[in-house]
Length: 453
Ligand code: DHB
Image 1 (cartoon, rainbow, N blue to C red):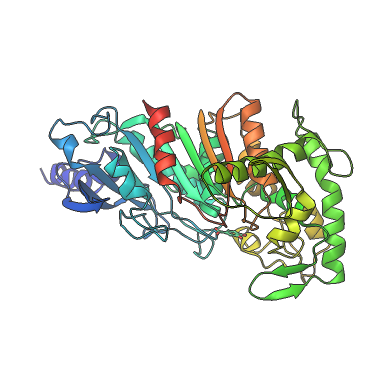
Image 2: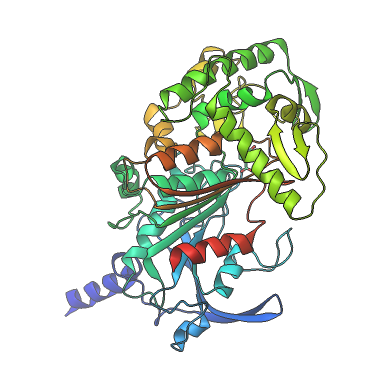
């Protein structure tokens, strides 16, 4: 009898982890918020651990938000409890840890954030907190391991979830969070993460997703320095916290990295996009076209555009000049932009205060230069998995025209690689937008509604 009792206590204590999460038995609360003067009601379950052996329990947990209508057999926006897509935005920025993205009317763009907007449009919203570089156990690849674990938790609870279609999971993120969103989208079920996932007790479930939405991704880190110099070479003043001139070593790095970029693009073996040794060619045309299309859209919407790097005639943008664009946009980061020669960038910190490119390792200013583990660099780059893993079918990628945190070439390469493998990609640059995300939620949800229905 005693044994039976112990077993019962054990089972109850670990029911959160071993078994599916019983929503009806767990505390939830109801909330109503306004979105454009319309009341949006939903139920919330908070702080649910999504792994069995958390190493950072304050972060390895998630919130579940479900529109109230689904508890009454009603539909919203054409979705029902069975068909509602599951939106899983992350709040990671700067490769810092990110907390659960709580529904709120608090955006700098005015109005509902993505979680609240999602609920108003009938999406089930599940928001994981995620480890980041400033936590003891938050270095690469902790972020993606957590995001995957959260997806696995959702699949593990498929039968118990009061609403939501686990075949319609959507990621979302901005900047480092955009990198993370693209990584989740690209790497579905890739075996390379198994060991990390097992270590923290992630559920043995699939972690592929349906769609990935990505804003200004600080991704493809080991190639992003070259991509940056391909655009910003020749501009020696940079504007990080204050304005400074690059030193001689940085200028030399800029020249050398710029020269290396065409070879990188060449090695991607795109069928229709390449660069000659001077950095000109069809890939450059593609990037210029992103800028041209952004400007044309803004012009067509009645905005005035007067910049010296665009040729405009009779309301039509005829061409863009990347060299002049860079002068207009200004350089934000000294070369190398990501793998800093001083080994002190956000990204170096993400890789445990190590270099992650051969170039910076060989030219390091650090007293004791270190190179990150190859495998860790590999699993942080979505480019390595596109077409090899169970990559998401649908992609929406946005990057501001005024963004100089990374080169436009980075999202462009991501999009072209995805397209080459037959994925459905909607990529655009956005006029007048700096390093930012989720500023166009109406358009984002129009796109999501289209792919989900
Ligand atoms: C972010 C911005 C950066 O410039 C960078 O190098 C890394 C991350 C961010 O906003 O997330």
